[in-house]
Amino acid sequence: MRRRLHVARRTIGSLRSEKTILLAIAIQLFVAAFSSFMVVGLVSLSDPGATQGAYSVDVAVSGDVSDDLVSVVEDGDARTAHTFETREAGLDALANGRVDGVLHAETVGGGRVVVEAVAPEGDFETTLIVVQLKDALATFERHQRGSLSHRLETRPVPVPNVPQSNPYFEFTYTVLIPVLVVLPAFISGSITADSLAEEIERGTLELLRVAPVTAAEIVDGKALAMIVIAPAQAALWLGLLALNGTAVANPGTILLVVTAFATAFVTLGAGLAALVRRRSEAQLLYSFAALALFAVTMFAPENPPAVIAKLAVGTETAITVATVIAGLLFAGLGYWTLRTLLDRGDHLG
Image (cartoon, rainbow, N blue to C red):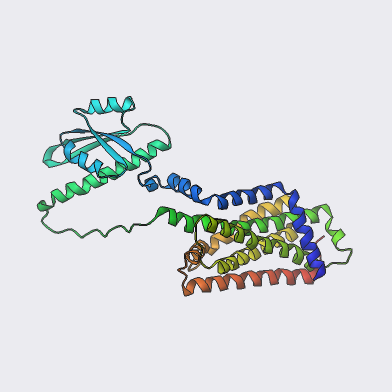
């Protein structure tokens, strides 16, 4: 055991020279430490409608049904309506920057209403404007359908209400936490593949065997270091999230998930390094194989992101617990298989 710990300490000490790995850890640290305002920004980019009134849009309204359209526009918390006599006057106000968008409504044959929406070309601000205009038009359409419902000969099937949810809550627990939890395990496997393949390629691995140390003990030491460091990182990230006001339930079970992933990825990295024996090829193959392994797990009854999200929220089920146990058994069996093969061959150099 002492020889394995020596290899583990040597592996962890060598991480100081791996600038890429340190940069990846620093990025994760930044994301976890400043998760509160980063979640707001990321959710706003992926779902501009989630700004919920943080940005107000001035809308020019014109046309012969402008009164109805104005009431719909004003109904939104993030919209303000400005009435104009003509469409051209509204477009002129848009060109001069007095309004952010234009809605022109005209009645056509059969009582139908055609609404023309105009938004400026631009950047992220344009996306916010378009989201508000679409929301106003959807509300206006519902009002028009309601006012014409007396013309229907049969009653349509009622549309179920759309459940309301907090977009920041969804993003934090379904995206941010799973990424911060899984990424350290992926990096651990990458370090293992890179470190072991480099030592085999350069011949420095033989220096470790002067003691002597068997091939299995060398892999044990490197794997121990990389498997331990992954849940340690995840624990730090979860702690920083808690300091930012993000409560995480079942942190111990989540760390078991990280350990299972780290063991599986480290086993994969060590196996590929022993097989390929060249650093660049081992890294490339590991990246593809790790992504493929993760993709396969998405077909499980509960995929890893869902398991982590349920554990973090505290809504785990029997399937969630069974998935965690199955992951631990799979990772342990994989590492046992690799170690058995190394014990039989006892050759890495």
